[in-house]
Length: 156
Image (tube, rainbow, N blue to C red):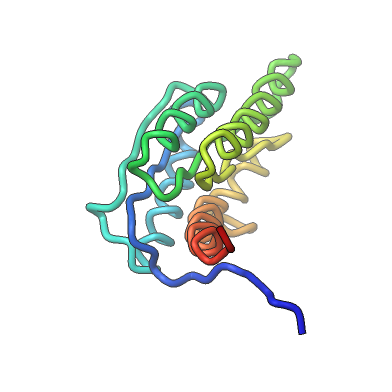
């Protein structure tokens, strides 16, 4: 039988960082609330969580890489909302935020979780920030916990 590795939702030791964009704050604040709820429900205490606010989703990757590389955090959860408008701005911001978050994780070997909504409409964003589609901030925090535990269990 093969060996199977997977993470768990057991409370991991260590600090978590939440990076939250101020742009689209009505949506992002709901994602932050969801992430905090998930962390607390899974045994992470308030004093093990730091929240860093950045201007927008485009700025998240730089801060994520800095925090993940600091050695102070077991995971970094990135929260933002990019909503399509009438110009091509959406494509640049969404794409660079996604690739930057991935690069930060790969460069630091720390789970850097993509909790940035990329939606066509405000309604879609509202639904993903706690309405019809659940709260993607909550989901991002669960992913962070699971990835911390998974990486700790993988062979060196």
